[in-house]
Length: 264
Ligand SMILES: [Zn+2]
Image 1 (cartoon, rainbow, N blue to C red):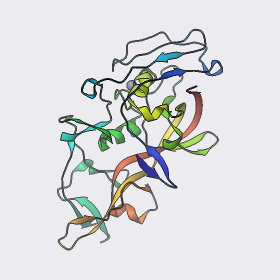
Image 2: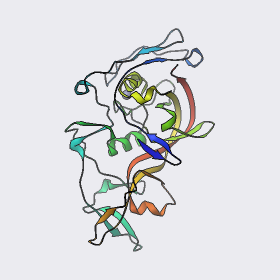
Image 3: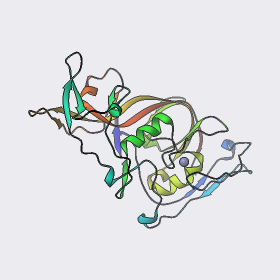
Image 4: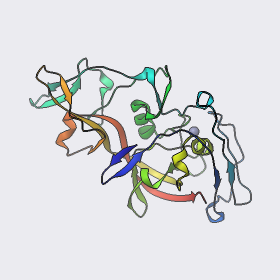
């Protein structure tokens, strides 16, 4: 769980139990699509009576629980050392000691993370690269497939108030990736915190706006020393601190958002 701005938490990657989702009649879709196989095998319930009730899975043994696409594994930790280099203007810039082309994205140094899925799931900790991919490519954080709803062309986003910052009447920001409609029940069954008044928004556009990053300072030996400032939110443009930071999560600004339900 991470702070964003004035105490707002925009990311929480959790784990367990179940509840029942109910979609209010006014928000149900008039032309509900038929059930279709989910590539991630998640449960899916369609609605013909304008009320959807999705019975969610009960908690089980952690060793048998499905692991969301975004969840980090213990074997994916990347200990590559960080150093300070100088850019073409001679200004200091944080970098990995042995640089790679995919280290920087949107002008930001991104935290490296393996993609082996080896070791044990680290519940509560998103894999930094998969989180970034989900946000930029609008992939479902549970199954890793494109999250966009075929029928509406919009992206479903499952959030709670503490991971969603409203910035306008139909605008908001979050570091929590989308969840496809097929995976909604599974997401709620895996994440107990989502039982705290979760809401689903259908989102028209999502644009990267900032990152949550750890801040470093030059050390005497040429390497970088962690300042202790972690998950500091930095805008993608106009922040001098970006040169001293490694981003662990991408934050997007969502527009054309429409709430479609809350759990009753
Ligand atoms: Zn999914």
